[in-house]
Image 1 (cartoon, rainbow, N blue to C red):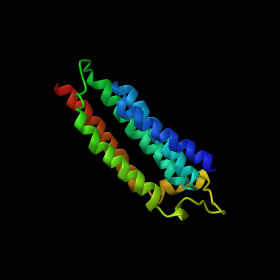
Image 2: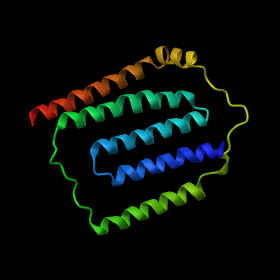
Image 3: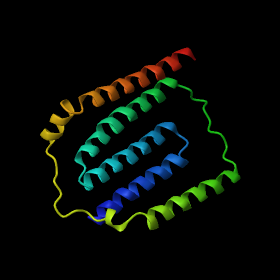
Image 4: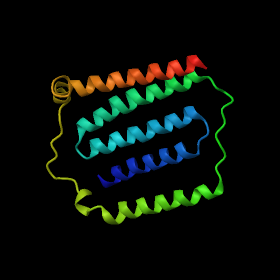
Length: 159
């Protein structure tokens, strides 16, 4: 079980590195897909099927599609990323070292252990909860994604 956790963590790290260093926006968006999908895998691995499903539906199915539509609608082919100066590397390394220390030393070891009796939810239960208890939040998120898509297309139309 810990090996699967390590594989998902490796894919998140790989996606983060690709997201940082890739200059093509479409490929960077696909590396963001790898990050979101691996995060959903970690949720499912830890017994949070509901959060994993929400990550796939909202994160991958909604936000990523809006990003891809925004990129496809912009059609600015002469876009270039600003040059990174050498002095920007030091604060980044400092933040990475601090966060690495927090992750390795400060998180309690009990959080890494999985409970023995994991109760996995059935998809019928998740679907029932989405359409009864969490319907308002689900609909508000879909309206937010629609507003983001309309805003991206209106920005493109003005230019």
